[in-house]
Length: 517
Ligand code: NDP
Ligand code: BG6
Image (cartoon, rainbow, N blue to C red; front, side):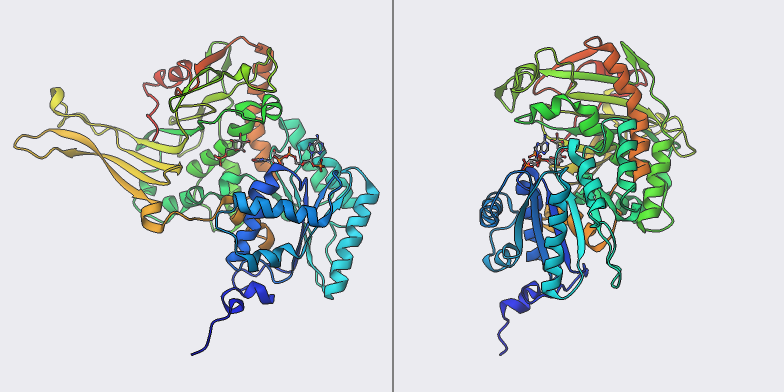
C-alpha cells in the first residue's frame, strides 16, 4: 500500500498550489503589529495554508513603526494563531508560513524605509530566481493610508514586472474616507499609483458566506425572481444589530459613529445585493456595475430635525443578556460632550422600475438586544377575502428572512391551517440552516477575501465609484447631524431594539420592524 505523505495531503509543503493558482506572492502588511493582523489576517493566511490555497512561494512581511525583531514578530503571530485561528495549529503548515515571515521597521512617510522594503523584496526574488506578485495590505488607521500609497508608488513597488507582467496589488481596509470628499481624495491618491484593477477595497461583509449566497438565492432559483419587485414586495427590512458596545475602540468609534462605521459600507452592500438587477455575467465588473446602478437610484434622504427619513440614537446604560452595561458616554475614551450616534436607521426609496414605492428600512446599532444581522423581504398580503373573519385567522405577511449571522440560513414565513376539525390559520416557518446542511466550520470572511485578492478576483471588493455613490447618499446626513448637534439625537437603553423614534419611520408607511432572530 502506498503511504500518503503529509506532502501529498498538503502540496503547499512542497511548493505547489493545487486549486486556484495564485502566483508566487509577497504580502506586505502595513500596521502588522495591530489588532486586525493578529485577529484576522494572519489566522486567515494560516487557514488558507491548511486548505492548500497558498501559492507554493509565499512570503509575508510585516511593516510598522515599532522596531520588532523578525523572531519576535513570528512569536507574536504564534500567539495570534493559538488564540484566533478557526482551526487548531497544524505545526507543519504553520512552520512553512512562519519561516518565510519577516518584519520590516519603518515610518509610513519615510521614503528610505520604503526603498529598503523594495530592496528586501528584490532580494527575496533574486534568491528564488523568479518574479513575485507584490500584494500590499494596508491595515493601519486611515490617517496614514495616503502616505503609504504614495511611498509604494515612489519606491517603484507598484509597477508590474517587465518580463512576467506580474502586477502589484493594494488591499485597502475600511474606513474608506469619512465623507464624499475624502473618499474622492483617497480614490485619487490610489489611482495616481495603481490602476483600478489592482485595487481591492475591503468590506468584510462581502466575504461572509451568507452574503455571497444572496446572489445564489436570488439568481440561482427561479421561484424568487418573478416576485422580487414592487408588484409583490411590500417592504424590505435590513437589520445589522450588535450586542457589543464600543469596547476598547472608543477613540476610533467616537470619530466615526454608526452611519460611517456600519451603514455607509456593510449595510449599504446588503441593500445593493438585495436590490440590484441581475448582472449580465458573474464577472466582477458586471456585478459591480449593477451594485453601483442601484445605489445611485436611491433618492436623496429627507432630513428634518424631528422626522424625515433618518433616525440616530445613542445607548444609555441597560442590561444586555441580563448583565448590566454602561451607557455610551461612560465608555472609556468617549468625551462627555460627544454627539456620536451608536444607532442609525433610515428609510430608503429606490427610484427605479423594480422598486418604486417599496421602502427599504435599514438599521444598525451597538448594544442592541442581541447580535442579529438579517435581510427580511416582506411580501404583500393576499387579498383579505377568504381568511379574514374574526380571530380564527391569524394571517401574517409572507416573509423571506435571509439570516446573515449568527444563525446563518433562510426562513420563509407562510400561513398554514392548524390541524383540527375547523379551519383556523397560523403563520409557520420553513427553515434552511447552513450549519445543519453544510456543517458549521465555514471559512472566515478574511480567508475568502485574501485568497480572492491574491488570485485577482475583485468581485467581493468595492470599486471606487461604488464607494463614492454610497458616500454621496450619506454625506448630507452626516452634515445635517453635525449641524444639529445634540438636537434630534435619541436615547435607547442598552439591550433594547433601539429608540422608539425608529418605529416612526415604519409606522408612517404602515409597517413595523420585525422582531429579529
Ligand atoms: P490598530 O489601531 O491596531 O493599528 C494597526 C497598527 O497601525 C498599529 O499596530 C500601529 O503600528 C499603527 N498605528 C496605530 N495608530 C497609528 C497612527 N495614529 N498613525 C500611524 N500608525 C498607527 O488598527 P487595527 O489593526 O485594529 O485596524 C487596522 C485597519 O483595519 C484600520 O483601518 C481599521 O479601521 C480596519 N479594521 C479593523 C478591524 C478590527 O477588528 N480591528 C475590523 C475592520 C476594519 P506601528 O506603531 O508599529 O506603526
Ligand atoms: C466593523 C466595525 O467593520 O464591523 C465594527 O468597525 C463592527 O464596529 C464590525 O463591530 C462588525 O463585524 P461583524 O463581522 O462582527 O458583524
